[in-house]
Length: 116
Image: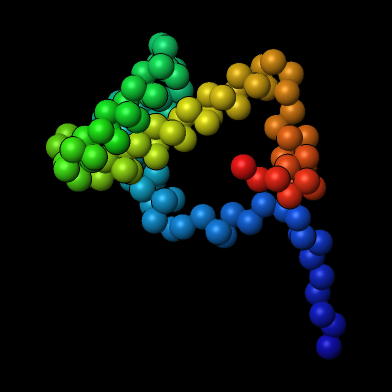
């Protein structure tokens, strides 16, 4: 019997992301796509400032005892993590336009073992 081999040591392990987080992102993004249009969030003026503000509003609402966003019926945490995902997206877009290489950054992090 031949045993297969896959050289994936040191690579990111996406299977470690909890399914609940993926579900939350998909649910909020689907809600937004129906309400506005798919990927509309990418084209908002002053997007980074507005999504950071929205993230904090959701976290403060949750901290104040309101578990569910009254507009969507979904957890404030779900909305907060989605807004954070938007901020990560815009940060990466900004770094790419400035010439920083995400692929090189990922390799450097993986090889150093210094994942922050």
